[in-house]
Amino acid sequence: MKYYYIDHLITFPDTFFITDQHANILFQVDTKLNWGRIIKISQDHQVLRILDDKISTYFPSFTIKDGNEHKLGCIKRLFSFKAPQLDFQYKGYYVRGDYMAHNYHIAKHATTIATVRHVSQGVEKVEIEIYKDEEALDILTFVLALEAHKALF
Image (cartoon, rainbow, N blue to C red; front, side, top):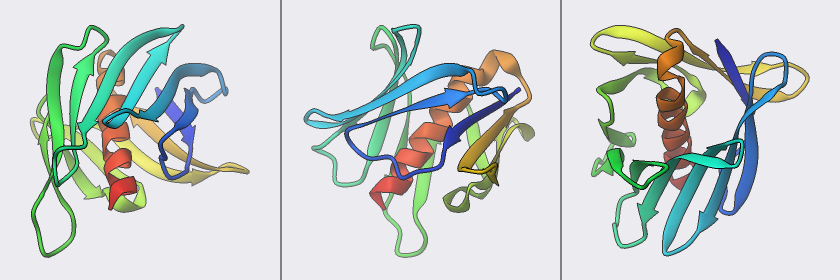
């Protein structure tokens, strides 16, 4: 299935929607500042995922939690003199390609499970094609954590 959101720099505070190919709203994404940066992914007014970046860390590090605030993993920036490097500790996902330019694949166990690309359909959008529907929420959470890191570089 393909998911879309309008391509923009994630700011704090912000609200935007993730839709399907028919422009039906599937998820709402809310961001805010509260002793750090918080991103909440909701569906039908129920929080499903929380990305929480505590301000006390020098390098951005988003802890990923479920709606009950149980830790599921994290994505953090590593010290590097070269291009930004991230450490992924979430469901075994990793990135192939250039995530800074919206042109990459998400893989797990050497198998591509999603493709993320920049598309222009009258308005600039990010298209996320997910090959395993049962992992859709986790992959969308992963992509939003990457986008939030890009906004902080």
